[in-house]
Amino acid sequence: MIVVMASGNGSNFENIVQCGIKVDLLVTDNPDAGVIDRAERLNIECKISETKYESIVPKNCDLVILAGFMKILSPKFVARRRVVNIHPSLLPSFRGANAVEQSLAAGVKISGCTMHWVDSGMDTGEIISQSACRVLESDSVSTLTDRIQVLEYELYPRKIKEVLVDTQLNIINI
Ligand code: GRF
Image (cartoon, rainbow, N blue to C red; front, top):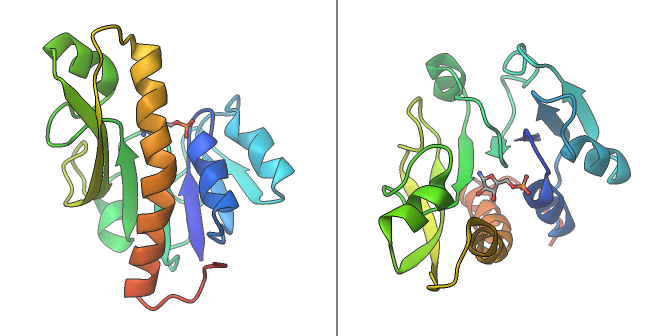
């Protein structure tokens, strides 16, 4: 069983589904999240809880995929489940919220995204893979975010499939 957790727009969630990963359940902590409409349209079960989001994720799920989930998960939750995340910077640089703003403020010339295992820290888990792009002089938070998201849409489903194949979970429709 594969669970996605998301708090916002949900473009990565939809992209993962469209790329053939069989998502069984979407969990969100935000009753106003755009991702809820996407789940309905994609016919994927959705559970919403602002506080009990951890307890509605089954303990026996094979993989938990974070896709713009904005809360830190408890040590107990991550110790019992395999959890991956996508982050809009080249970790270990620019952890936490506002990673794109932090990158622009620091004046970096290369940015990108990082897929990593989730531990109980904030964006501190082992790195699985990264994709990089240039940062342009003219970039705003919006233009750089858009360029990074293009990388995310390619990297995240491809590496999720690798993780699932590595663990011999036959739950991909390639
Ligand atoms: C992604 O771009 C990812 O980097 C970050 O949250 C964003 C979520 O965007 N973790 P969306 O909701 O998938 O559009």
